Length: 79
Image (cartoon, rainbow, N blue to C red; front, side):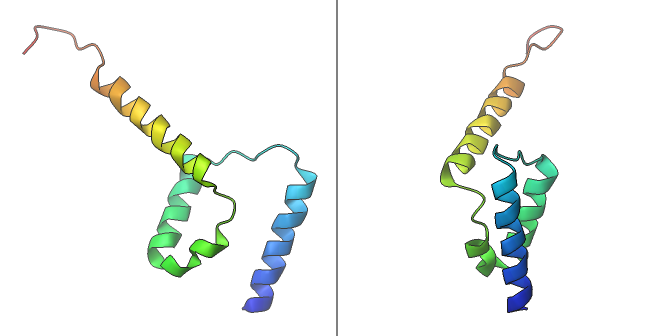
């Protein structure tokens, strides 16, 4: 198991060297990461890809989309 983890980490490092820009994560990728974390919480040390800045950016984007949805124009007579 340890050897497999080392090989996978090495493959990630090689891919990071060949891809100079940041790889964007989709919503499905984030859901998979959250699901894995909830199943095995001790694996948080393996997620070196996500930085605190990224998490803050996601949080702010979620807040923006929530308030955009909350303040949308509704047709008809106001309540």
